[in-house]
Length: 257
Ligand code: ZN
Ligand code: FE
Image 1 (cartoon, protein in one colour):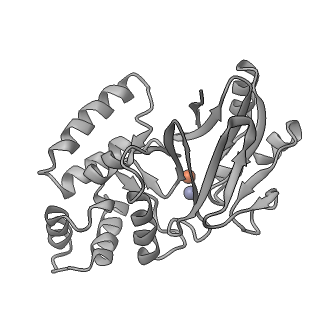
Image 2 (image 1 turned 180 degrees about the vertical axis):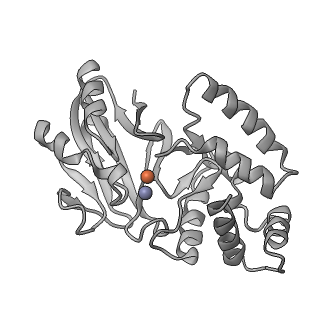
């Protein structure tokens, strides 16, 4: 039976560890120490490191982990991550034998141009999506275009409803506050806000989320919904109909929210 465990790091990152009784893989280790502590405490042997994109809060711990564990490091081709041993691209499959788990690579440019995510099925369906998709939000457009991000998010929203979504940041409460402003009539958002507040009060992660929850609450996946379109148009003071323009308007609005 696999466990998927969040290790909190920095201000609001989670470093996800997938493990069974003996072996572990780690996604986006922005720092090494809390990961090493967890592996020692649980008596786990690291078998792989997986990277979604080149930002330091996702890659900063690779070197110190490699000093302790001689393991493959998977990630997108990018010269700024020299520590990768395997460059992966769309539809590549990573077979983590020790975990009886195969992860499939999907390219999701937008937040960065190199961004990839990992999707796998083992009793549950799981998605490790880095900074592309957040609970009720999405990554900022640092390198990619709005059109790229819209396509990337579409790819993720089309995954099976029950897919568990493991995002890298705890942004849920601030994202819900924005989503409620965009779509005040969405009652599911009110429930989500109440649940998330309760969890955060107890310092419990609001993640994972699921694809079905995101399709029901995330304004960035709902650019075709009348109330979201209306909210974006009202904010901009202009009539928009193209989903990409709705998306860009929401993204800009959120950046300054
Ligand atoms: Zn990032
Ligand atoms: Fe990040």
